[in-house]
Each structure stands twice: as C-alpha cells, then as structure tokens.
Image (cartoon, rainbow, N blue to C red):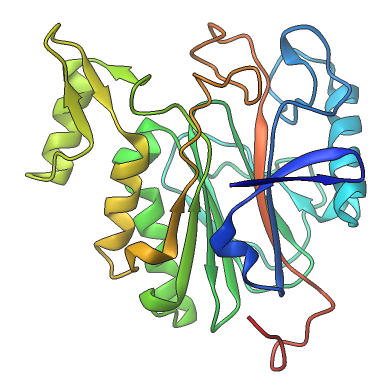
Length: 272
C-alpha cells in the first residue's frame, strides 16, 4: 500500500485500485483526527464510548480531505453477518441498516466499512463500473461474505471475474491471530481440504490467516490472483498506526476503508 497526505490527513491506497481514474478509494489510519486517549486520534466508529460529536467531527474531516460532502460517506451498522445491500442513494441516517457489505453502480456514493482487526475488502469491476465494500470478521469470513459480494456483482450486474479488482486491507495478521480449535474446525468444515490459511505451532497454538482465506474465496470464483492486492499490514503488530481490538483489550476506535465512483467521470469515456 501507498501512504499519501490529503490536506494534512494521511490515507493509504492500493496500487491495483490506483490504476483506475474513475474511482477513489482509501484506508484511514488512527492518525490525523480529534480523538483522544485510547481512541487517539482518528476514530470513525460509532458504538465506541467516545462522544458522538468527536466521531462526527472526524468523519467531516475525512470528507473534506477527499473533497466530498460528509453525507456522501455511507457507513453501515456492522453485525458480523453475510448481509449485502445495494445502495442506490445517499443514506439520510447514520448507519441506518444492519449489514456487512454494500455494492453500488451510482457515482458520488462512498461505501465505507470499519475495522479494528477485521478485514476490510474493497471491490471494483472495471468494465461495468461497479464498486463494493465488505467487512469480514471471522464470522463474516466463515460465511464467505467476500465470495457472496462477488457473486452478487456477477449475478445482478453482469460482472465477469476477470474484470474485478480487490483490495484486502489492514487487519490482524497471520502471525498474530490465535484462534481456538473450535474456530479452526469450523473453517476446516467450510473450506474442506484447503488449509493454507491455518498454521499450527509446536506449542499447539493455532493461528488463522485472514488474508489468505478471504483471497481463496474470491479466486475460487475466477478472480485472477494478480487482480487481488493484500496490504500485508497487521493491525495488531502496528496498533500505533491502525486500531486493534485484540491488542487493546477491546478499548479502541475504528479505522475505515472506502471506495467511490467519481461523479465527474463519463462512464463511456473514462480511461483505466
């Protein structure tokens, strides 16, 4: 990923998605905002114990830094599910729907997902100009929310897997995400013999590779591996830059990943 400053706010970008002028995307960090204490300094997540006024102020700063109105930032009330919603217009309530993934073909709508160890996934179909965003915790990953979002793009928008590009954002890394045998067994049951994402150590500890298991789901539908970029940044190991729920013992904020079709790009004339 590449770090760039946008009007004093540092944002991270995927190289594979940066190729396309007709979209804008980002991953925030915990740098640059107004939050203090355990939320320092750019918490974007409602549901934490930080005053809502500070989060609104941070979201406004994000919008201003990327040149859009705050209303164009569409967040979701995340429930660790496989629910996906088509967003056809700007939402008038903050996080009004319970879901963990969104998709749209409408310019000017910035789809945003929050994270603090869970995997943020960003999607773009370069031919049909469809964007998607998903929040994949271990439950969402187990229910294959990333795969289901690609399937929705294919079935409802005519997307072809070879035209879909994916960014797998910062989250708890494979060397940091220890899980119990019960979780490992659930993943083994769903993904059968494909165990590239489970690591067992001599001390009998089991670690889950969130990045690989989400990539497996997506490539199984035909999305080329070369179209998928993994950030490789562990929020747990880099908790000074990205919020980590596990590293902080649950007292932390949320960073965000977002993607938007630009309003000023002509769909028929845009270049990649």
